[in-house]
Image 1 (cartoon, helix red, strand yellow):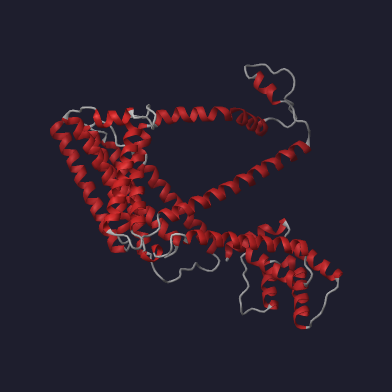
Image 2: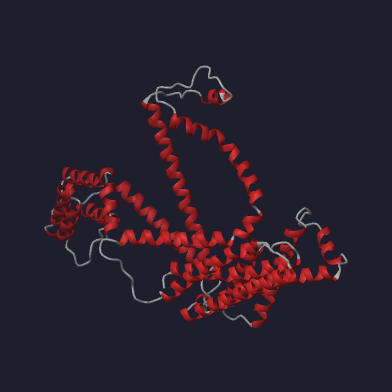
Length: 465
């Protein structure tokens, strides 16, 4: 099973466990305290329970070590949760809220509410423990699905009895969303666990890129739908507060929206100078005409938008990579082999990655400073160009055969490909030393291959492979 599939299976199982456990916690807290159980506290307890269980499963760890670790972690998390729920106005480092929590006299119903709140927290903490300890094979996943479905059915029966006998109507309409989230995560986890096979899966010829894109979009859509349904009870109670926050966050963006709308919809021959009647006169005057007019101003705006888009995509790519690495580290399976290494193994692994990255950057800089002094280096660059275009060279393929395959997909580059392949064969087999003028022509041919006009055909070739 690939690391991505393992991560997705773990996330789906976590969503399945949190769904039915949060349904029960929400029902009990609404029935007794008339207040919904906080969803962030539930998710945090489940995540920390899984993390502490993974840490406690290391090599040479005794049972008492795991018990002490979970007890200390759960106690600290309970203190933090109670502070965020009841004593948020008091400074965290102050002793006032601690004295009030432990020394304030309480009645029996208040003690029962605290015990219920702690029990719900332990319910999610224990769910995180089982998420790491339980096998992730198909029979065990189906067994957990049956157990969660049965507990949901029992919850609906109890809720119906309370409504009929006690005439007490809870906010039970949110349960239907939790049931839908449970089914989405459960069916996804069953499909992922059933598809665990050592046989390498391949796509039909010509549909590899499309299959990868559609599979990724399908998984993103499934997890987005499940997460939205799971967080609906929390978002339902926070809708008004979120609307105020969104309104306050969007206020600084109003000038930018006005600029964009005016730029998109104003006539090209309309100038924003002079007196404009109406209530929006100060906003229009604030825009002002650009310093550069005509097609030059439009070109500068296009270049600026393109640069901002590239910077945004690069930042999102780095953020997505860091989040992926963090999720992979937090939700990886509990294995004795992974914990059998030394504690500083991750430091050495990080050092090796930095060393390899530094060597690669140094080689690229050295190659740029040195330049292409032979036809072989230009040919190897053409191999990298073909690999990025979706046409990787086969080890048993000769340079002429690989060149013919490139010519079939890029007929406009036929002369450049033939020139590079022939120069490589002459240099390798006939030991021909090419003159600087010939190398200049080879470099020009390689630059033409990387021209932006051939990017659409390269992307089309990559999707077909």
